[in-house]
Length: 376
Image (cartoon, rainbow, N blue to C red; front, side, top):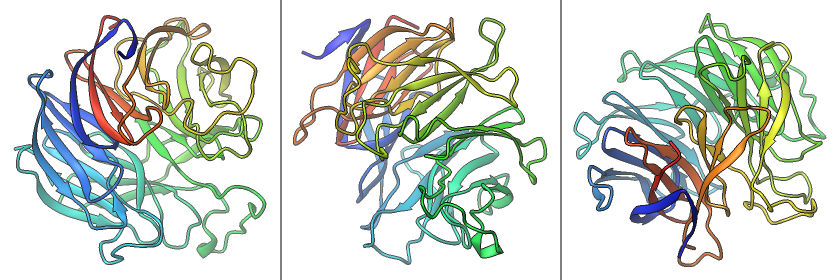
């Protein structure tokens, strides 16, 4: 029986492992970690008995492990895996009409101009805030696409760390450091909160979408040698302060170290982000000794209820924290899934919630759990 606190398993989907889950109404979208499965769509109107209604396949050597839906538009990433695969397929975004989710219709494919493709992104129904590779740049950068006409996406703005644009003559200063890599932009209002892997976090002013401007940056690496994965701003002040949760991912460690965790930042003075507390699983880091990758933190749900945030915490499954007091985050629930067949422990990769307060937790190896909780 699974280890659980204030949670219980309501339903399970037996499917290939995934990188992201997203729910619109009673339709669940799963972006898979490995081809040939690209994106699967499920009817979860009865969460105890979910039904697959569509699946989109990919050619070998590519994956489509992220998916976002707004209105009738679904966008999925196309990112290259390793050196093999059909180069003609190309990296970028697949754009679909899902007005009938059982029959997703491809509207267009937006292609990157170089490199592996697109990793993570945000999508508000009009603009996509993406992390593509681009011709002339080292590593992934920030880019904003206008999908007012989803059949013809238009780039409206881009931003990068000075030094990435070697094709434009910039001097590259990181020969002895990790390649810069925009990982995940998230928009709130006229700000973009951007994780940049081992280069830390950046807050950008996008009041003019065509000219993103740097407000501030902060980097805890290499002192804590995990990459910065997600910067999640709270929608309302907590304790009178503007707060942002920042998750470090427990992979790509610069050296063997204890598992990663999440930070809570005070960004009331946004020119000077200040870490004020941390979020971690009790007992996971008792003495600071190194543990294998994918033991600790991965990703907070980009949807949450009030101040209660579900996290996909790799080998620790679903972990739920309340940050109503941002100086003292509190664990309020957890659910440790069964170990997938062929694996030695869970590998929870992403979580989201629906309008009913149900949590969807996808394992990167196999399966999606639908979890009921009393904490929302």
